[in-house]
Image (cartoon, rainbow, N blue to C red; front, side, top):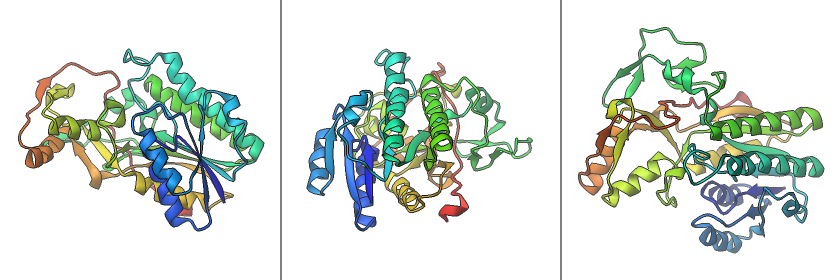
Length: 321
């Protein structure tokens, strides 16, 4: 089996490549990366030593895919990952859409020509922010939890939201780019008979991240706390009770490996660390205090764009169990 991983030198892509080489006998990994991000060069050298065949290219340029060999599957791990992209002053809306949507179009065209299946790494940020803001919440042990006495929609449980939850706008420019990519992948599956898996991931976290905001709250908070940088609890009254899950990329890779072994299948699912691997910011701060010494955040009630308290419910389809 030949598998192309886009963004192979990034955090998620490099973990996926290593896991698949260890677990999937006879697999050939072909990697595509622009090498623009911090750490890419280090991962490139390590992956080459493992036998990954690497190509330097940018998904936004359709011609960069012309020299790639045909493969059986494509795992798309290349994206602009920040939920604030397009509004943060560092990335324009056009740049965001070129990375996350135009790149998907070019990759889907490559898959159509190669008759390759697609595994798309999407995000829980596709869920409607206004709908999430309507959750009835209580504070329990320094975190928000759903009020069990209030009625909830069938798409919500104590463990979080399911794939049936609303994706109505606004969901952020980033979320919209990923949701549009999902829809296009599904249309290519229907029109051209391509197997397509869509994994709506929670917060990927683990060793090898650099603590930048775009890599998610866990990486950012841990690095900032250990370096004694100032921290703030933004929004939600400034208490730090908002909750996120943590998903290690090797756990995601286990699922991707199973999906690669179902060539005639496809589907859409939430993939997260789940309730057992979730923390509020207040809980994460206490964890850091015990290991690095106290570094109390300041309370700031200012609302940050696209804030939510969403947790996604991990629910592996029966075909993968």
